[in-house]
Length: 254
Ligand SMILES: C[S@@+](CC[C@H](N)C(=O)[O-])C[C@H]1O[C@@H](n2cnc3c(N)ncnc32)[C@H](O)[C@@H]1O
Image 1: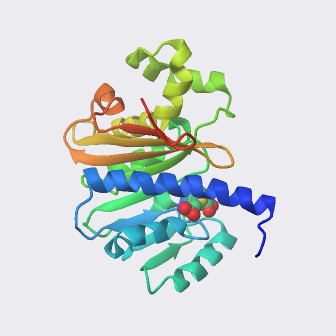
Image 2 (image 1 turned 90 degrees about the horizontal axis):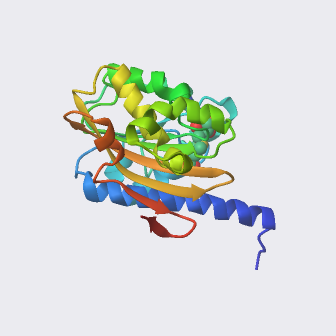
């Protein structure tokens, strides 16, 4: 029997925690917001398009119109080859552009998967997302999934300074800042983006899932759904739909 090298084994292990996080969050989305409709799937599928394959297992109609963005030339080429191999299972167009340049042409609901490796914080991404809200690229009926680095290598004092306003509004004790940051930083970013776009009174962001997992670094997967209505900061952060899961311990976070 072929033996797996320790290096390959550890790659597989980390990969599976992420895959499991994606599948779990998907299941929660299906249960709460998924409709038997045609969707457009806009993703950062990387070279292997693994997330597209998982979604295609759930329902073929979810992957009939996929656009995967990839800025790295070599990964773009590899993804294009992979998309060709998958052509019997999914309709994938790989685009050698920035995902924030996505131009929406279809009215049907979208699932966006911003599968980032870095921290999805206000300072880095708020303007990009504000633009997507402003241009109606992300709109009511859409789902936004975000992967974010939840470690603190950017410097904890900087992180605290950037989120002082949010911690203050939520009245978080100083000792709980880190946990709050890990659970909420992409929500802080999305709220800021929606506010910058002037759409707090027009769209209600729902936060329905946070999955803490460990890849090669500490990561989080976050799920959001866009409804008609208003977004109130505290209600959004403490959304009644929000559930949190610790993948390493395989249990709900209270
Ligand atoms: C985490 S990987 C994707 C993994 C993939 N979703 C999977 O499940 O196998 C993210 C990919 O997106 C690319 N990327 C990151 N930010 C991007 C952006 N703004 N626009 C286009 N590509 C981007 C990176 O080069 C990388 O290949």
